[in-house]
Length: 111
Length: 113
Image 1 (cartoon, each protein chain N blue to C red):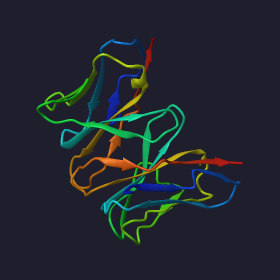
Image 2 (image 1 turned 60 degrees about the vertical axis):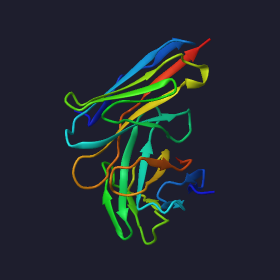
Image 3 (image 1 turned 90 degrees about the vertical axis):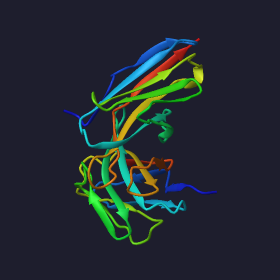
């Protein structure tokens, strides 16, 4: 079993749609959680951290369920510029801060 | 500007050659990482370092070597023992070992010719 698993994608949605990405992780001792965005042939960039109480940043909402070891990202009112690959990242879990990346879910927003 | 810089952006290697990828950061971060990304795949951890003069193997360390002699520098050497080195290599850093977010360099595309 992979340490971090994500929806396979790709997700093809029209502008204005709401889309949700899911992610599960295997290490129950993991302590920090993030969503990164990666554009084609570019480096990943931090989109948002994920907090236990859930958090929102504009059109983006992240949720964490520690009991189920599950993380989600909701994007409302999708824009063409949201087209990218979204990476779920988990770190911690005893000892070193080792960041583990999911394989990513590709989002394509069309007019 | 503060940030993390990788060089070169593109690198071509002949069979049997060792090559070294540079990664420098001026963010005063303690932790640094090297990842490899293959087309259509996620990032895989090669090596990571939590502090100067210390580093640990990641999931795919075979055929690679690193050093961490200075806080700001974490070069990666791709040796001839790495049988399939063509990939996108990403260096990252984070503030410390307490699970803080990572910032990435722009990456190096290595191609074996």
